[in-house]
Every structure is written in C-alpha cells, then in structure tokens.
Image (cartoon, rainbow, N blue to C red; front, side, top):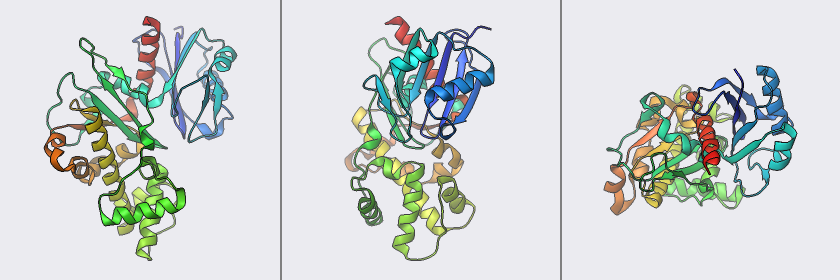
Length: 324
C-alpha cells in the first residue's frame, strides 16, 4: 500500500494520526501521541511516520484546536506554533490543509452512524436544518453545519464559540462564576466546560462549602470522586459542569436554529457514560423560557471518539480542497 494522505487531529493534550491509501478509503495505523512529549507538531508527525514505517505522503490535512486565520498557527491550550508554509516544505508535502479541529469534526457528522452515537433526549431531527456541535476536552470546541439546497454533506462553521461569556442561571452558579471571575477576569464557557474547568468547579464548590473534599489535579479524578468515591462536592461540581454545558449548547442550538440536532464531541462527556443522560444537561439545555418546547424537540447525541471522526473530517477537508 502507498500512503496518499496523512491525517491528524491535534488537541491540547494529544495528537491523533492516521493515513489513507486513497480518498474515501479506510484509515490505517491510527495512533494517539501525547503532545507534551514532542517539541513541535513537525516532530510529532515525524515520530509517527517513523513508528508506522512510512514516508510522508504527498497530501496532509490537520485539524487543530485553534483558530486558523493566517499562515502562522499558534495553539491556545498548548505551546506548539508553526508556519503552514514552513511545515509543508519541511515535510515535502504537495498539499497541506489546516483547519480547526471542530470544523473537521463537523465535516464528519454526516458520516457517523448509530454505532458512533448515543442519543440524549429530544425528538426527531429535521432534515436539511442546521446541526450544532460542541465538545469539552482540553478546551471547549464549537462548530456546526448548515445545509444549502442540494447539499448532503453541509458547510462547516469555523468559529471560537467556546470563548463566549458564560452566564449563570442559579444562585450557586452565580457564586461559582464570581470565584472564577476573581481568578480569570473574563469567564468564558471554556473556563468551566472543559477538563481543567471541571477541576476549577470542584475547587470552587469546596471553597464555597468551606469543608471537605480532596486535592485533585485532573478531570478524571473529579469524575472518579463524584461517581465512585461518594464525594458530594465532586458530584456537585460534575452536575454544575453538565448544567453549564447544557446551557451553552442550548444557546448554540437557538443561535443556529439547529433543529437537525446537537452533537457532543470531546472526550470528557463520553467518559461519563450513561450517567450523563440523567445529569442536569438536558434540563439546562431546554431551560430557555418561551423556547423550552422548541429546544425539547431537538435531539442531542454523544459522539464516540473511538472511530476517530475528526480524522474522517480532515479527509473530507482534503476532498473539498481538491474539488475547489
């Protein structure tokens, strides 16, 4: 087999890579590498190529957790930065496409089947309507798809909706946001709805309670304390996290008119399993006053990241670039 295209999904914590022999073909040698172990994205790609024993393919597409607005790309939640032109030359690529990672994931949504999705409430999706995409991981990714007449795949939206200002709906949320504001100044949705945000929420409820709790350094620790460690403060933090996510997702659905559904990506929610289905997410998603019934009809799905959907979206971006 001769590799034709290299695909990468670059987050703030890990980079996932694979290659294709041809457009629309299967993904080969999918690997997950920790970003912290490599000095640059080029170094990580070269390590991958050496590990799987292939030369750099002529074409590559990278989805990266960062706005892509110019040749220079500088990550928000990691130290990596690079010039697209320089990276293309260094790897000897004929063609390089770099897009936001959630734009790539949005491009993959029409290709996902029931095995990659778990439904969380709502009615039936309205064909041809916009769909929304949101996902907490190292940061909070946001995108969506709109479907002009005759479009089956949709046009992806490239934005930075994870950095909208977060609003409170309850007295407890007000107090928590007050503490986050003291620490960060502007409190974006990402400050609470991501892995590090869950840790901050736990520290906040511990401070407000003035008692108990454990020292934690990761979202996984908070989740374990909440669901297996009988820590009521960790459970409260996790419920706040899901409530904030629901509120932001509801805002996104209203903004886009996303009657085609809301998809939830990233690694944090998927790891919560069936507990998430009974969390405050859905109630907060629908809690929009006069538009409660509008949102109640919108289905939500949690995406299984195991199928590497963002890599499929990156491949789709290469297809679109080739057709342009």
